[in-house]
Every structure is written in structure tokens, then in C-alpha cells.
Length: 109
Image (tube, rainbow, N blue to C red; front, side, top):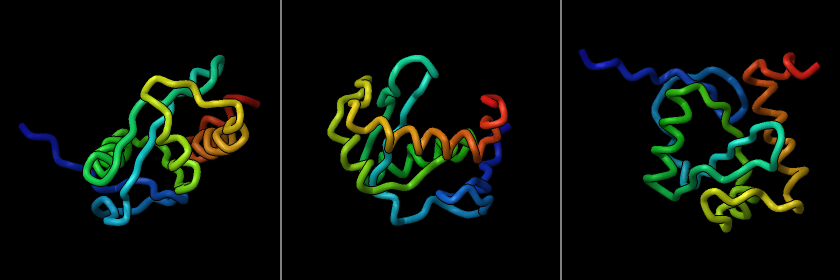
């Protein structure tokens, strides 16, 4: 039996919405943060690849944050690279946002 695709997801503001991938998605970057080392680039892409990254994140209820300027800077890095020190504060804000909307923030009190 084929799994029915769920179009309900959190938008870039943390609100639950229903619908397809927005057409304006042209770039996507994913980060992995283990809480010990600097976050690493785990996926990135433009246009159709960006939309697929967005779809997968939505399907797995991964928090998303929109920041075109930060995405442009991170897109210059290679897959597996740690983020540079110059971007620590900007990325820390994104991680804090992700923890907040996913309910993980309570785990760190």
C-alpha cells in the first residue's frame, strides 16, 4: 500500500499550514548540529533540488527557517564542512528557532 503524502507542515514562521511546496523556494541548505561540534552542511541545492529538500524536511517535520542572505553564504561551503566562526551567531539563532518551534527548547533548561 502506498503511503499517502501529507501536505501539512510548518511554514518558515513555525505555523502549521497545508499545501504544496511554495514556488518561491529556489535555494535550500540543511545543517546538522550534534550539540558538541560546529554545525555541518548536510545538504544543499537550488531550484528543483531545493524544492525536494524542502519536501523531505516537511515530510519529516524538520523545522525550517528562511534567511536568503545566510543561505547564500552557507551555499559557498562544501557538503560536510563545518560552518565558519564568522557565521556562529547567525546559525545559533537558526538553531534556537528550530529548537523553539520543535519543542526541544524545554530540554535545555
